[in-house]
Amino acid sequence: RCINAEKELANLRKRRRELMEVSAMMIQSSWRVASARKMLADLKMQRRHKSASVLQNAWRCTCARMVLADHRSRHKEACAIVLQCAWRCHLATSKLCRLNAEYEQRRQIAAIRVQCCWRCINAEKG
Image (cartoon, rainbow, N blue to C red; front, side):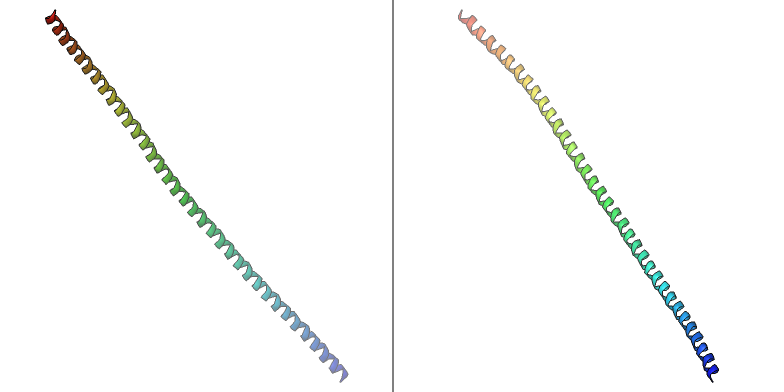
């Protein structure tokens, strides 16, 4: 009986060791699966963050281009206004010079007529 008990005890120990090994393998396998899932979730999160960064950067570039285009448009308008103002000033100055020349010419003609009339009056008296 003692030998049977020892064999049975040895079998139980062997079976217990096998169960422990199987349990350890199951725990390790579960740990590896959980670790792989966590790594996959981390990679997906990193990919989402990178995608969001790319989209944000693209949007910022688009906004900057729109601001620059608006600035260029306003700058062109301002340049056009300056050129128009300078051209109108030139036209007004030219017209003023022409009018001054015409006025001076008429004044001289009027002075000559007054002098001519005055000389006629003086010639009749004298």
